[in-house]
Amino acid sequence: MLIDEFISQFKTYCQQRFPSETGTATSYTNAVKYLLEFMGSAEVTKSLILEIRSLEPDIRDADSILYVELEEFYTSTGRSSYLKKGFLKAALPVLFEFSNSIILQDDDNLILLNEVKDNQVIADFSAEHLRHELPTAENIAHSYNVRRISGTANESARKIRSGRKAEKYFISFLTSLGFVKNADFFDVANNKTYGYDIRFLDVGLEIKNIKSGTFFLSDNEIARLENTETHLILVDIDNGIWFLHNESPWLKEIISEIKKLRAYCNTYYPKLDPCDIKIILNDAISNNIVDISILTKVQVVSLLSGGN
Image (cartoon, rainbow, N blue to C red):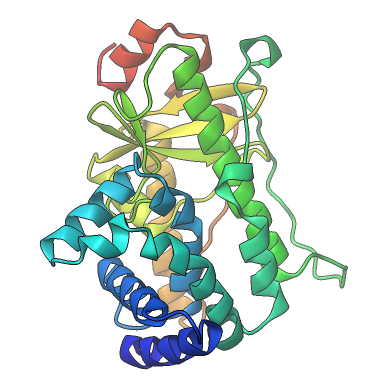
């Protein structure tokens, strides 16, 4: 749905929702309109609403990087009152309520919205629990037998939650060493400006949950790795945290093989697009990674900033 049409219907909804509150509908509508402008999308889609829902904790947190960017955007356009007077925060529940009926329209997406609440995702680091055993996996034979599985939204929520737990576990590890959040490092996983998970000093870090012995790389993540913008942090909660440099031979080979596989499919199977390729960890990676969960604060700084 185009933004203008969405905003028009949202204003009507607010007017019906708050019939006796003068100015509320207009304030909520404008606050949401400017948020959508900030998000930079020409249309209001399911994915956009879900993205805003995932960003809600940062929108409400005046100390977050996202809030600072929002404040700069609203102020630069003379609309700071919609943010500073709390209209945007107050409008968010109404936005999600309205979106449920015209954008999401199904129970599965409601499950996803209800399940993935950032402030309820907790994963505390404890050195006492570490086993330091890199999880590996075997090549998986696909089975095409009918079986009962969770719905798409339930599975998506599970993946989002497990990935966010890995990010928060790594953050807990950093703070356990004495690094200060929003000073030494920044949690930017929900910030569209960065495109990775953690900004540590001047280094971008992409966090991967590898409990299954596998992980995935998106096209954007591959591009950032190849352009030396990021490195990988492999996390298995209560086991270990490993650093994988973007120049490692193992990773370069993996990325090369992904591209070759897609090129092969493009030539011989043009109706197929292997977009999600599972990367299987094996013993060959052992000489390419460093278990940073055993390092000191000084050693972590040296390693992640390019030292030996």
